[in-house]
Length: 193
Image 1 (cartoon, rainbow, N blue to C red):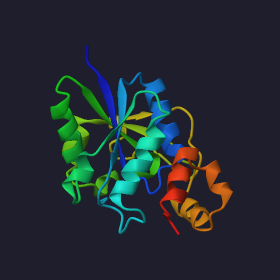
Image 2 (cartoon, rainbow, N blue to C red):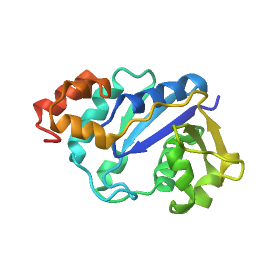
Image 3 (spheres, rainbow, N blue to C red):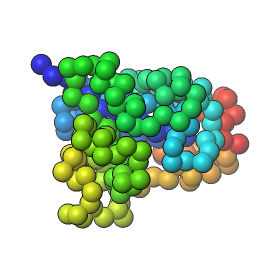
């Protein structure tokens, strides 16, 4: 029987409740056997990270503890450089040769897919599980739409920039957006000050 595996990549700076919710919904709606969080060492589309790779890995591991069928991979972190999505998905396809590999993304990323490295190759080999985000229109002529499966309910709009601002102020309001264990880790290690 083919195992269904979703790869969920990102900077996770910090990982927040909407990330967890996306993973949980994907597992339930598409009967996934696992969802693998892959923390980017240096994301191709982001200029900088606010927390180091070790801290971001640790936070994602804490968040993943409460998500059924979730794992955390250090594959990209170990490369210590930019790793492109097609390389990561190929890595997991080689690791699980009988698996059906998906990529879990937000609809904001769907709009940017044409800019991704080797996107035609990536989209020809893998499908995307897409979480709809508020304010992001998906039209019938969106590229690679035929390669997408959509999570039924729209996600909440959460800004990592806003979360980091709350964390910088050490506002307890940040707990609305991030897991208590992750919040504890951030305070203990003095992150986002």
